[in-house]
Length: 153
Image (tube, rainbow, N blue to C red):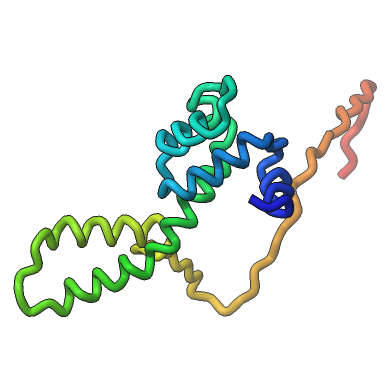
């Protein structure tokens, strides 16, 4: 993996990537997002004592999730085509329900699935006024003056 990609990943995820981290990421992609196969290949190629697989997965979780998400985005086109093929098929399609659910799931995960929207309409053409928060009002105690008085009419 090139140095500029390493710098981008370090900035985005806030970690310092070691040489073995970068090699693991590269192998993870080459082994079609299979962490166990990537780790096995890493262990065979490095010939050093490496931390367990769990350490790599925990440390590189954000990067791994980015790679998985990118893979789903790349498969979204195929999922959409599968839905179209299922809809236009004249004959029964083997495993149609499984293909349909898988396609819908992929499209949902990349944000192209069914969406719910909320429409708020006040039914008025008047503008909206924002009123500042009320301030607490402290009333002074009433002063009572004692004494004699007469009513004047």
